[in-house]
Every structure is written in C-alpha cells, then in structure tokens.
Amino acid sequence: AGTGKLKKTVVLVGMMGAGKTAVGRALASRLSVPFLDSDAEIESAAAMTIAEIFARDGEAFFRSRESEIIDRLLRGPCCILSTGGGAFLSARNRDLISAKGVSVWLNADLRLLWSRVKNKDTRPLLRTPDPYRTLRDLFEARTPIYAKADLAVVSDASYTIDMMASQVIAALATRPDVL
Ligand code: S3P
Image 1 (tube, rainbow, N blue to C red):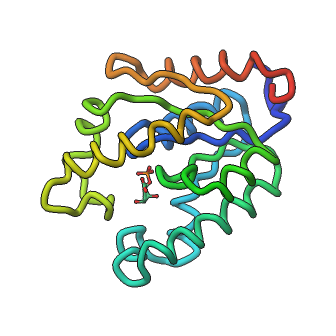
Image 2: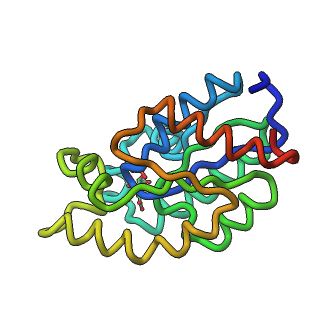
C-alpha cells in the first residue's frame, strides 16, 4: 500500500479484545500515517486510567469525553483511530465518524474476546460478579450495531496482528475514497 495516502481517517470499532489497538498500530505503521487511540487520549487528558474515570466520574462522563475526543481527532489530519468498544454505539459518534472517516469493524467471536479479556483488570464494565456473562450480553447487544460499520474484517484466533492489518488494507483498497 502507498504511504501517507490516506484520504479519510480509518476508525477501528468493535468489542473489547477485538484487537483495535494492536491492529491499529500495525496498520498505521504499514500506511505511514499517525496512530491515535481514543481511550489513550482520554486517559492522558484526564491523567487517570479509564477505570479511575469510571469509578470517580461515572460512565456517562466518560462517554461525553469520548465523544468530544472523537470529534476533535476526526477534525485533524487523516490517521488510524482506534476507539473504545462502546464508542460506535452512540448515534452521534457514528454520525461524526461517517462524516469524516470510514469505520472498520474488527469482528471477533465471543470465545476469542473472552480469552483476551478474562485475565485483565483494565475494563471497568467487566467488573461484575459474572464477567463472562457481562461480556456475552454486551456482545449480543452490540453486534448488530457494529455491523453498521462501513467495512468489516473477521478476527480469528489463528490470525497474527500483521495478517489482520493486511485484511484491513485489502478492505480499504475497495474504497477509492479512502486509499
Ligand atoms: C469499553 C471499552 C474499553 C473502554 C471502556 C469501555 C466498552 O475500550 O473504552 O472500558 O464500552 O466496551 P477497549 O474496547 O479498547 O477495551
């Protein structure tokens, strides 16, 4: 793929554990464009972790920061933008994203997502008595919304990050308005 030729910001969406951050970094380096991550931007602006923001200010506060950050980043130079798993659920965020960028859903099955998130303590939404059930409920509720993304690639346990980046590039290559 060409370098620095992105015509729209590529916004990676999908569940926690789908690989948005890892694939986003690989993609940005392959395309020679900047990588940004909405969760990381929120954390650095607040000088707190996502878990601390949820605990201190609540999810609604986090969601409003998330929306502001996405809006701001989409106004900047074209980049690869990884979002938190909840970002694409908001109709306002989806409108912001489709106005300036192209959305790509990293579609991973529940088993793979669980294997990646189960031993981490960084996701406040999974701090429940039955985190597997919580993840499953989120997965079921969110899948039809992620399916609204412009493009989708399947994430399988056997795929490397680089293979995932290649798949995304192949999907973007079908869009002359993007690549
Ligand atoms: C969330 C996903 C997290 C983070 C926050 C909420 C969600 O991001 O934004 O914990 O609603 O799915 P990742 O998808 O990067 O884990």
